[in-house]
Length: 291
Length: 130
Image (cartoon, rainbow over all chains, first blue to last red; front, top):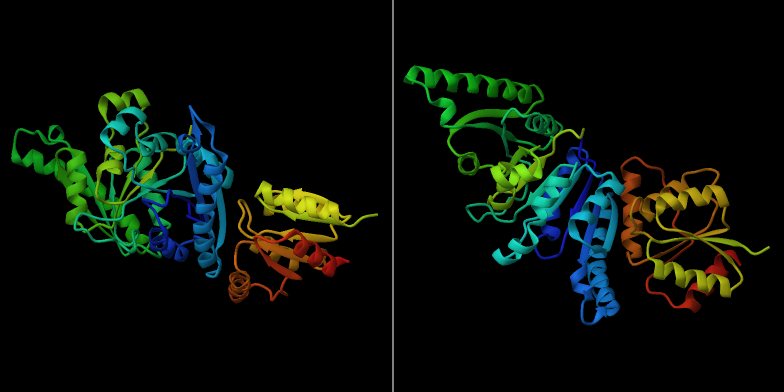
């Protein structure tokens, strides 16, 4: 589960070369290959009234090509391998297709900047991608809560554990990055219900049990040479994970992606997707094992 | 028998342009869409010349060039680089890969930066393989 090859999805609005540069210390782990993908959305070139606008497609392709040539020159000169795709289509399908074709280990994508109405009609590309991708997805965000740009997102990640197979897989994934992780905070958000004991003693007992389980995970990180600390939070997971990331001064939130069916997510919601979309922090989502 | 020239480029417009130039000048073109496919064709067809792009999916021209020049059976096939990537970036990348422990490899027979005029391409091909 090393990150040797990453797919960098850009529209040149949310994600530019500075974001990619902040990920280049992954070279110290295993990264050797970056694949750029720019998807020209169909509605930009295929109009109902005017038909297909070939000229516009050429203009958009060349605009992307010029940027990618510039970025690629920089990466080639660092001894990296670089690939490029500029395609017309729908974003999520093309990302999935390219990731499969190139067998990438990580997909990097920016946070959607759609308005409320746009989201209502088209949904969120990121949510759709998280639902369909079998590859880990990093939703990159430029600004954290304090307005600071993290120049090394993998330096101080915070892993939110819910004991699901996907979150345990996320822990294993991070162990491969021991060359670049300085410290990791491992947290679990317990629900108020789980701690609803009859006495303070019982509540503290539950907290202690959770803490012990987290410490076991921390010990496994320490064994890989990564300094790790455990924390227990109580309350709504969406709010508490955000709060924990601020308190831990995290550079990245890492979660196992939910394995819930799409219809169930609509009814019950999904913490990983809410965090990926709404958190101020960059978020790395690790999907469950594919059946 | 006319000489075989392998064109390795992911851009269909560039492949079409190169194929036209090659046919007009009496060569037999073969097309490949990326470095991986390019290597398969090199081994299968043993071309007399390779026109190679740099920035492509699957495997870049940087890697394919290195693989060609470190393969005893293929290293003598002349290569003309035809790319939007600047010559100095290509040469620097090869230098860095050599520093990482790779073998020292020679410069390509010619390096043309896109876009290139048909006359210039034909002239360069003729100069390299006659």
